[in-house]
Amino acid sequence: LLLAGFKKPLSPKDIPSVVPEDEAELAYSKFAKAWDTLAEGSSKKERNLVFRAIAGVYFKENILIGVCALFRTLAVVSLPLML
Image (cartoon, rainbow, N blue to C red; front, top):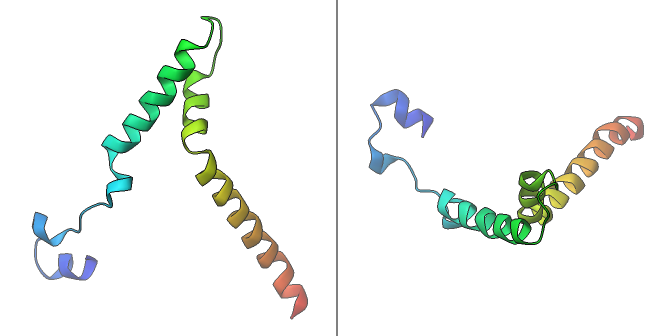
């Protein structure tokens, strides 16, 4: 895509579309559902509803990212010692 952009101006048909699971509409609907669930069951003094809604929607992905970061850190630290 970058190479094509250097050769000629890109048109919309040159840019690949986004995978449906990464579209903003789907992310918004997941967030809105989590927000409504939290807003209905919480008192008015409860804080961090946005954080809790985002954490609830993306919990599995964040755990996977954390595990991958841990493995990468362990590899970066331990592999030079093994060599």
